[in-house]
Length: 390
Image 1 (tube, rainbow, N blue to C red):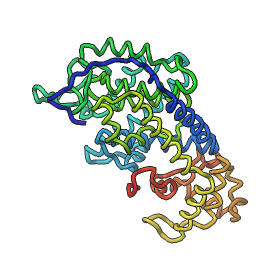
Image 2: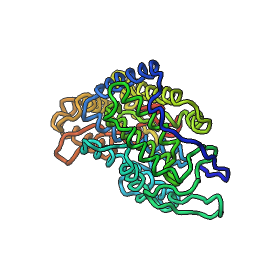
Image 3: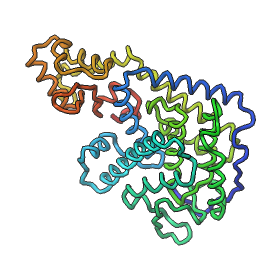
Image 4: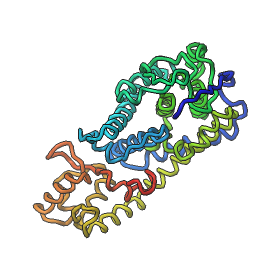
């Protein structure tokens, strides 16, 4: 986002920590928790792990899109195979995306392994900012100085000392940031909230931290990483099967309007929780077993003739893909029985499906799992990315 010469200095308060009137918010929080729990248990755990990887890519795509940084999903997948584009701008976006996905993985590992981790602490927020921006190309650490009109390179993890902020935002004076951030860390601790209040506090803390703008740049990414950590801690992330960034990106104008107009905390909390529920419901519909299998079967039927330069698929492939989706993993020796093919033909089919990425396996003897290569996402999971993207 662009910076502005006309920085708005705002009074800043962390009170109330939670909205005082919370009846509607409590209903939304309880519904979100219930629906997220249902989503997290709707698929086989092995398949869920593969979907979680896909959703980390989706989260990265939309989080970058919010910041005006666009990278086609297929290039992100290529980056993880070490296949980088020659064009510097595309290569840099691949590195940026790879850094985002890696940090999400590290963040979740910290939350899972450190029971006393305070995700709202200055240490954790500093770690998020540092871990992300040390991994990205230099151009993503630079921002224009509205006074000198020169480009400034921020230091990863360093709090802002000047009042430079996205256009239209009202923000507290930079001199107050250290003390306000310390106060934020004492007021917003997931362990201090219980039941629906823990979910509401996730929305309230997002609002407060975004309004604080603690770093000279990169605050949007940091706040979304923070909220990801919070919802992961209070277990409403459905095991990684939905993404907040998609909900924000699809309602971006309304989202930023809350910070430019300094609307009420309760209004924002309801807005964010409804966006979260919308994403959970969207993913629940995508992963409804019968409908997902129908889309996979239809895709295999379409591949009975050459499609988008891809080889023809045998009709028996549908039975194999269905089995691995429902069972998580299938021993290679079972594929002949499942498909009704001879052993030699079944082995050849497995090899081609592995090459294309429709199946995955740890080694040449290990069971096979369902793969989700980029070229099938638009068919199997419509509208997960913007329509027409893939």
